[in-house]
Length: 58
View 1 (tube, rainbow, N blue to C red):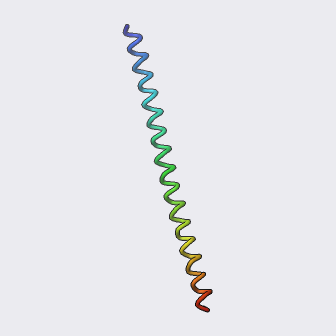
View 2: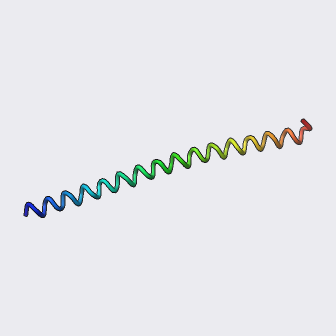
View 3: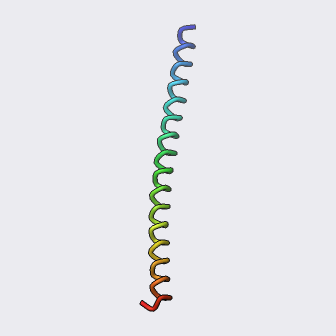
């Protein structure tokens, strides 16, 4: 009985570790996407500025 309890405990600890890893990867992916979006927004704003400059004759 004690051995079964220890195996169940180890299994639960392994599952918890996997969930922690998944959460860490998800958070890192979200941060990466956030940074990529900010870069694309800056690039778009630059392109808009260039377009305005071209149309205004500057």
